[in-house]
Length: 466
Image (tube, rainbow, N blue to C red; front, side):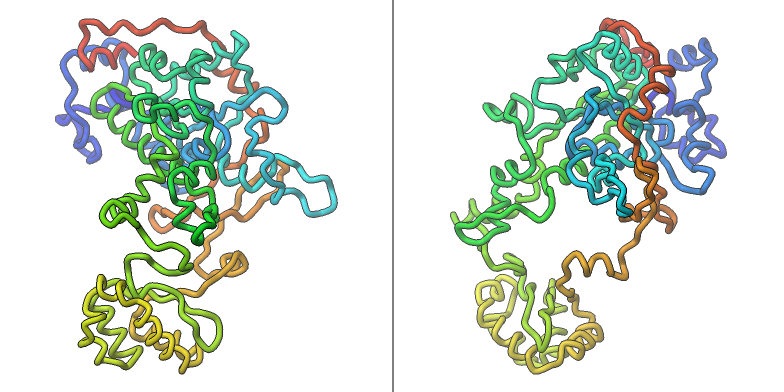
């Protein structure tokens, strides 16, 4: 991915995607002629053939090799989405009979027929390991380290989220790998960031709820004096999503320059980014967003749940046009539009208690079904307050089959992004070490490589050297 992706613009007829690749230098053209390699390569086959699978699925990362030294959630989330897109993802696991400890987080996918459940058939593992290959190694053994170097030599991406400094001590630090494999995209995921950014926090062990507390999001989500954990592992998921996007950018960088790059991200940094507006709110007035109001938006009104003759209904009015329609056609109170207290969103937030009384009094006059019909008719956004039963039965929920190591097939939630209107087909979840023998046979082992000589070479020539 890089020099293999370049195509001379003069010979790109019939391949419109080749227009986006920069022209090859004469040195690179001569190099490719020497080794008799096709001008456009991605993995073992041409990009144009491998972008689509035989089943018509779009797999734009087909031919990309990702090696991931991962555990828990953040890195596995990132790499599982790369696998969904067609990348070959080799997951490194401890050779201790247990592997990634997230395999044992739950047994929700264990057999329900009275037989002993398979502990690694966890919902966490199904969600985070689908479509990968499992390789069990002991990186303290020289032969296993050499095996990993053999894989990295052919890999496009190396991801890790081990304890701070662990990969460096083991000989797989990003700085060393980047010297030895200049086209490699290396990705370090940590709790608080690199030593330059995180200061004394850089080497702290970090897990999701700890970082939720450190970032301030647990206070915003809770009641006064009672911070709470968000209902999901928000920091882990956020970093998995940011890292996934960053890897794609890194691969584009390789394609455009022929050189790899290093990416690092932190759990703390991801949640801090989410809290940008809340932070500026605090720095503006010394208080920040109000907390403890449940289903109520701190900066947009009316946007909250209201009592009805039945279960509550959550509404969202986002702009002045919608507020006008809401007052005239739902509340049937057009005079509110002339009330200075409600003349803008900022004013409505300042006088939300008075506005809430007016809305709730109106809603309580209607049966819930009649209110929902009215909201639908006037195109006012609303939602029902569901639990997990509501999600399980929701008409918008799309599910796809995923096979777990026991052989059972579970209906997992489909990837939210579709290509050409079809949900993505998800790969099987690997049993612990299921691919170890095959990977060892394929890659063998090699001694730890020396840094590639780069002095005096252009970026293109350095890429060609790989």
